[in-house]
Image (cartoon, rainbow, N blue to C red; front, side, top):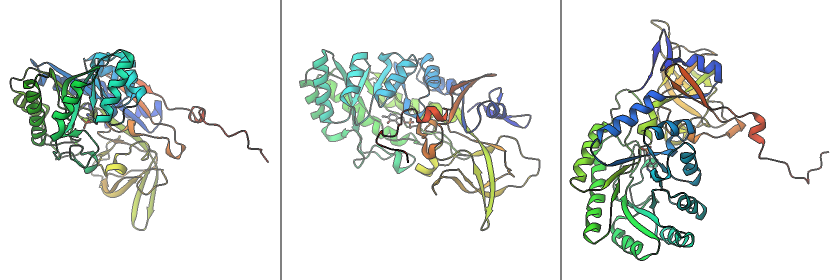
Amino acid sequence: MNHFGYRNGVLHCEDVSLEAIARELGTPAYVYSDATLTRHYQVLAEAFTGRDVLIAYAVKANSNIGVLATLGALGAGADTVSGGEMLRAMEAGIPANRIVFSGVAKTEDEMRLGLERGIYQFNVESMPELHRLSRIAQEMGKRAPIAFRVNPHVEAGGHAHISTGTPETKFGIAWHEADAFYDEASRLPNIDPVGVAVHIGSQIMRVEPLREAWEKVVSLARRLRDRGFSISRVDFGGGLGVPYKDGEDPDSPMLYARQAREVLGNLDVRLMLEPGRLITGNAGVLISRVEYIKERDGRTFVILDAGMNDLMRPALYNAHHDVLPVRTPALGAERRAVDLVGPICESTDRFAKDRPMPPLKEGDLVAFMTAGAYGATLSSQYNSRPLVAEALVRGDACVVVRRRPTFEEMIALERAPDWIVSG
Ligand SMILES: *Cc1c(COP(=O)(O)O)cnc(C)c1O
């Protein structure tokens, strides 16, 4: 469900035409729908009505301040993986007591930031991290509420590169060593082991593999409680997938919630969730303009002004994005297989190969659908292209939530060394 659709032959985001946005912002540009963001958050929240739940939105999926503020105002917390993400979440008005800090490489400075601000929970991933956190908390005279992220040895996720619950990946502590980790945590000063966490991957289409991981977490939580630990929170992670094309039909948030309730049973804990893609994926598109049509060796290359630096998922994961013309093609126009490529000097700068597309010509606009998650956050300035602009639409209002930097801003942090003597 999203709020992108054709009106009078032009693709709109809510009540705003993508042509108007392209005129105003230039291209490439991401456009997000407030109504879709809100709906996705609320559908999930409502599926857990009656249960104590904290939905800590995974900031890395889309960390724009406008998006974070929108979700924060609805009651969302934030799952963060760096000091920068924590600061963004707080800047967007998400209170520290709804912020979780995850990630395998938490630095001392990041730990200090989290402790100073009083974040809700550190999801700890290793013994040396636990010891470091205890030492820093002690130095600061603070207590660190922690959950261990366990690696449940469950395979899931839409692609090997986004599967995180198996022993070969760097994530989490070993499932069979969990008790020993909690024992160590209870012995260390300034550490409060309050929860158990898991996150097994992304773009998971069926809830069944999640059940296995969640059951392990719940059985661990019960055992720890029996052993005298005050486990008051269980974090089921994120990972539920979204449809990227026709025929893809991920299990619904309702099914997901039903399974979570079943697995939790009568365990009286606060449930925590860390959805990213589920909230923002279908809430955003990337608009791009056709620069050239190039015919060569029997192939047609549609060369766009968006590149892999703006939307990396196809190059990184071989991911599919539907690409729609912003103006509906003439009735009866025939589709033809083309390669959709960008301006970057890399062969992987190709969004689609042999993709049937309606006729396109120089200057036409297209929209990459389902680009709201892992789109702008993965963008770069490769090839010295300015970072992609972003807009947020609500009804007939459109706000530029990140403007495109100028060339001067792009190079402002750089300088040539003084030893250069110009010849
Ligand atoms: C990436 C990540 C998420 C979000 O994953 P989605 O597939 O976007 O829901 C949640 N938790 C952790 C620890 C992550 O690394």
